[in-house]
Length: 129
View 1 (cartoon, rainbow, N blue to C red):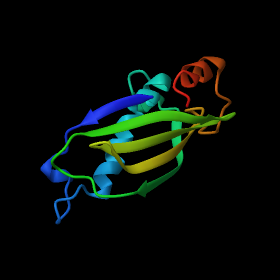
View 2 (spheres, helix red, strand yellow; view 1 turned 90 degrees about the vertical axis):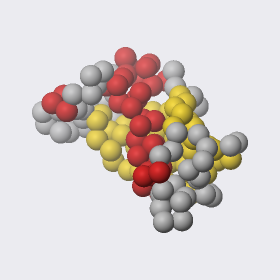
View 3 (spheres, rainbow, N blue to C red; view 1 turned 120 degrees about the vertical axis):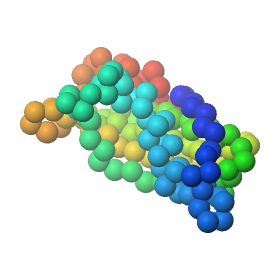
View 4 (cartoon, rainbow, N blue to C red; view 1 turned 135 degrees about the vertical axis):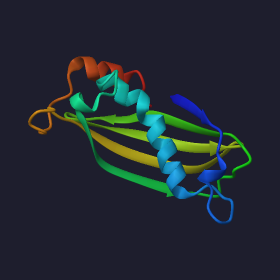
């Protein structure tokens, strides 16, 4: 499991001073960076070979401005051309949200899905639940 810690900022809040749902979506994106770098170590847009095919987020309670947040990320599934990342947002020992994201490995030139290479599979497997 990969964990990143985030210190919420005032700009992450809504008018009730709770963390806005869009901030949590951005935090989940930050938590996926490690997996992106498996495929694109320098995150060069000119060589990008992953597309986001699906994402879903569930919210279970309020996330507060006052306390650090942990984004926990794991590989849930590895398919032929795609993989699923499962993530959770935790604050003060309480899970406040979770997210599932399906990413598809593509040929950068043709934009068509390609089978995950054995090297990519092995790198993802290390992070599997």
